[in-house]
Length: 107
Image 1 (cartoon, rainbow, N blue to C red):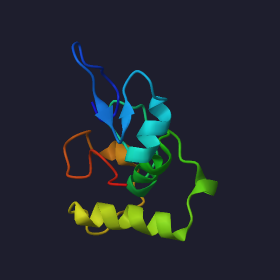
Image 2: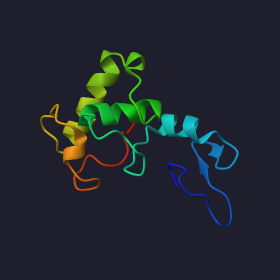
Image 3: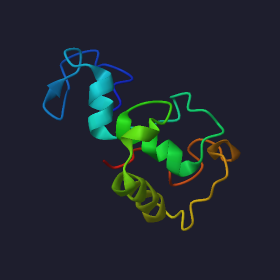
Image 4: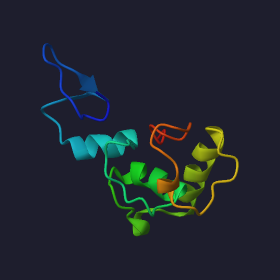
């Protein structure tokens, strides 16, 4: 539900004070910092670049939107999830969900 990929069949869901079905899900994903294997993120992006997409809620990195603080936060999030030295290898080298870096960017 947090990524707004599905909606409830009964009742309602509020995420960060916004009701699903009445909120722009792109805006909501950017507020969450959502990254999911369900998105078709280009396989040639590095792991830090994929995490950065969570900051903007986009599939492609928006490089002008990331200052040094945001870029460092992406590396810190990867380190916190057990990726000690984020490399410049494309993330497509690893399978979705096979490592601790899959999921939310923690924004």
